[in-house]
Length: 354
Ligand code: ADP
Ligand code: MG
Image 1 (tube, rainbow, N blue to C red):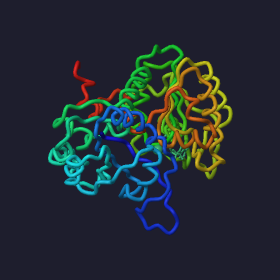
Image 2 (cartoon, protein in one colour):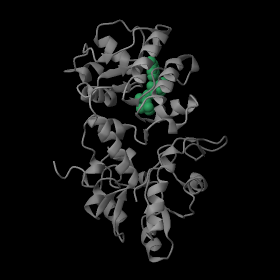
Image 3 (cartoon, rainbow, N blue to C red):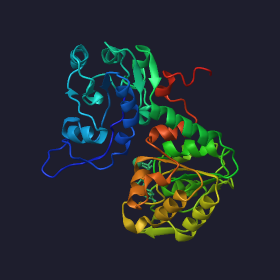
Image 4 (cartoon, rainbow, N blue to C red):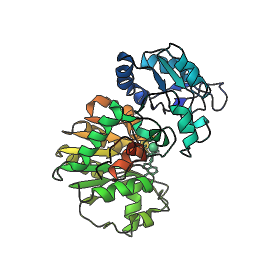
């Protein structure tokens, strides 16, 4: 089972670089539990395969992983340990951080074969990595009968609903940085939503493209290129018109724009949200994001996702249960919402009718 344990960890003081600390946001791990329980409760013996970027090894967070999942399991440090585990009687084991093995990021079929060896089926439950053609996500599906885990199936169903729901009353809220991942979503939704509300650095990019002076504000160097072909003056595309500015930099959208966004959100029938409106890590620039967060939490139907977006929600003291669906994906959710075909879903039969 390809699981997703890619969570941020807080380094404990005194720990050397790349050593583990405390898991501060267990959401992604918690979301693995349902599929894992399903398999184990049906007598399936499971080798968990996952990666983490914040640290090198799972060893330092082993106890926390076991606690969150409510299971005990050994960590297999070498690929050869998989067959040793399979030859024994234990039900569950976790392979060490799969990105530490050569060939993972290269989608190497040799690594995929080593992962598949001795196993009967492959279950992909790591939605957040489905936009990557990596060995444990893509190549492995060529070596085993492959299935979507319950989480992947749920993610796809909700995000597909976001794409397919009727245009009327549908509102997309996009903030944060990285135009390369956000602009394709705007582009894909411009004919699929009634309003697209834009904040964060992406708003700076659009304002600049409209010829507005954004001073020393953060912008994406690629934005002009990425925005090509999109009608930036489309009335459905709503950008802020007041701002919180420090040292000639736009660091948050202003209160009037935030109130306007909140009003549109509250009367929507579906809202899809990714990315903070401002540099929320500094509370002086988190005001508008807070207003938008509370409005989305009250919306009829809300689909949200993104690492910083979840951090924003936690910071606002709003429960994740106040949203209809919280995606575990950041990049994967954006790629899906941009209409891209995800390499990790290809081997699971999702695109077979195309
Ligand atoms: P997510 O992880 O939810 O997809 P992003 O990673 O795209 O969100 O964006 C989050 C980052 O965007 C935050 O670090 C935030 O500080 C930054 N940001 C948002 N607005 C601004 C701004 N106006 N100026 C500088 N940084 C901003
Ligand atoms: Mg982020």
